Length: 239
Ligand SMILES: Nc1ncnc2c1ncn2[C@@H]1O[C@H](COP(=O)(O)OP(=O)(O)O)[C@@H](O)[C@H]1O
Ligand SMILES: [Mg+2]
Image (cartoon, rainbow, N blue to C red; front, side, top):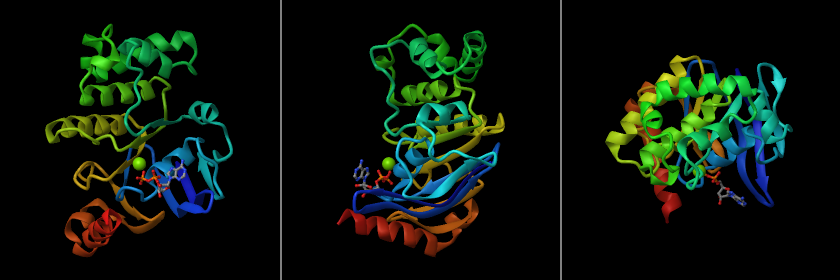
């Protein structure tokens, strides 16, 4: 289990994450909703070791993760799929995937690559094409595949639905669900309130760095006050 306890992150005087507690269990999807600027990416980046904590702790399987450099967080089995996907456009699909496997023993890479191609047949068909030629949805699948190359136990997804048409979002969410079924614990953050609610077990809503709601996914749909807290404040951040 991945566990965040009282996590605070600061950029200078700005406290971007204020006291976030959450847990991610193997084989489940935890969803964190929140408007732009809520602190969602900062929270994920802190788990990935990309930004330091001001206070609090992050542990995985009972051992401390916070304070480790990013490559050691990956070796411990926790991998980030960053916002905007960040695939290497000039490289082929297969080269992108192999980069994701650079922390794994060489002999394993072939085997893991085969598994990734099985989960994402579209990547197998186009393995020699440049990643830059892929559609947004295909690039998102490549970003998932690249993360899976490190054989993670926890995958952190930063707004996987961003910029994608609804039908494509459905395909992406199906893949997230498959990853969870394979035993991986998923922590997904989204601004899009529709993406992921169907597959999530736990849902939290974050705003201005803090968690303003936590509960089962069904409650987000039915509880008007939750949506108001979320969308009302989202409207505020626009102004
Ligand atoms: N590198 C940074 N330096 C300074 N402030 C930042 C940096 N990254 C994000 N912020 C600020 O931290 C807050 C949270 O940002 P972010 O985590 O990106 O939110 P979200 O992913 O929910 O949109 C925002 O106010 C943002 O402007
Ligand atoms: Mg973000």
